[in-house]
Image 1: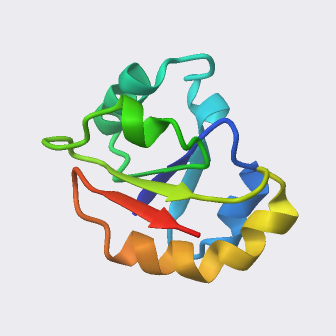
Image 2: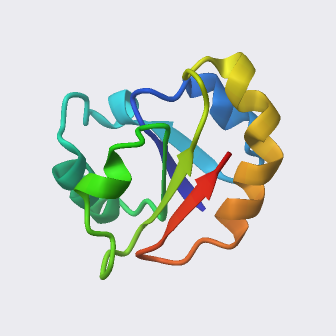
Length: 106
């Protein structure tokens, strides 16, 4: 699957998600884009999953009818050391991704 890592997610986390094409918001040239527009750009670019730690996203965006799954990882910070232990759960969430859904981890 194509996975877009939000700006607040360390790029190196993608290395812990084997079998998936992981790109970051900055790599795609989407830096500074608001969440609604960002999800649209991600969908148009062929991403199936958007991975974030932004807890506000679930309250700000309507996901029903979208062609992308949002995975929200709840951690104290966006540090790689806190996210790496969640990699197995993230992989499981990616494998069960359904368009228009929100999957919460942690």
